Image 1: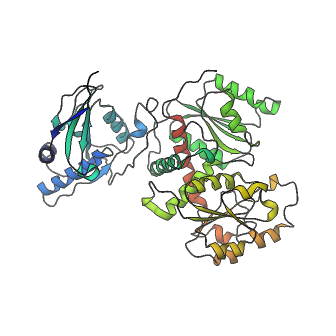
Image 2: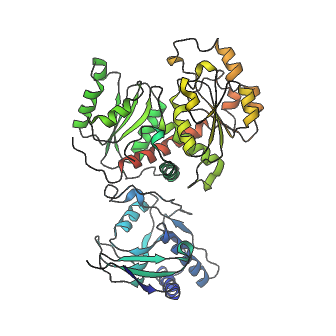
Image 3: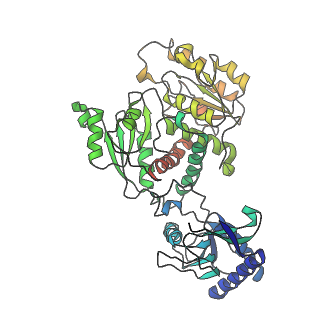
Length: 180
Length: 319
């Protein structure tokens, strides 16, 4: 197995900054926004995005939370028992624009679960999806509104998103599985 | 985790994973929509051969909050009172396509029999069997202790070095047994205090220290937690102590004894309480008492237990 670097720390920073600008453009500002990250790395990315948003719009404050989707997954009986992570929603999502944040978009099943989880928390005005990397292979009619990088990949490959907070460094790499 | 029969079978990692999941469940229990879809389409039967109000309601709430379909089966008014055996009852349930069984039974070991019999291929959760074990009670006690001690920082932690004194009818108590094994697994130090007549014979093989004198024990070990057990009159056919007044004076958490405890000592009781016998109202209604928290946490912990035994890949067994 060999790992190929796709994004460096500076690429990641640039991508997040661009996503922040796109969020502000589509939302016409930073008001009524709430960022909800999907654990674990989505939450970290959501915090980084909020920081960038607040630096672009001085005086603004963008609430950030986490949305655990474990109990809403459709593969609870196909995978070993998964541990849950905290759901922390800092403000009511009613009539807000919720931006879901995750590191990698793949089958779309996690996002499907997240949409169900949101329904149990309230009725947002709109829900958007921001991801650092979109690797394709969707199994559901779901697409991201804001994408850091499109990464065409093969099924057998693994996309590793590494973040300073968890892994000591920033970067995205692909593990290529040797075909036997 | 395939079944939850005894806290003896639960590893430290499993116990902490379960308590952590229960943390997230307790957050769900505080929101407006107290429901998760995890067990949608699964049917859970609550098989209660022994009277119970709080445990059965607690399990039922947990099952419903995880979207399972619930069937309540009480021995009274069922075919059991017509003489149907545990085997026939279970096979009937299996034929109906039950996905999990929560069982309370007066006979120690009944849940184990059910799990190993091959009568039904479903996870079994022990909701109290005879004088043997009551694992979900021990887990909710551990959860309550951890939450009081560490608050929001509870996740991932055990109960290392926490001193727990369990007082009262150890002999008949499945709660005490389940607590002893689980607390040891989580790193706590357990002391048992009881009259010699209410201690089991093999207590010297348990990982605990034992005392007959409550005042001495409390002064010596300065416990973080004092857990009072119910005097189970229904299981007492012999004279285990002279009379209730003497028991209360010597082994009850009387008002006087309670006020001599440090203000941070937790007072626990699995309920239902015999006020004035093993615990005084002064202790039971104080801020140090966790009695109502234990009830609330029971639902969260049972949700976590149901989730852990029901989800995951199940190997199909054929006999």
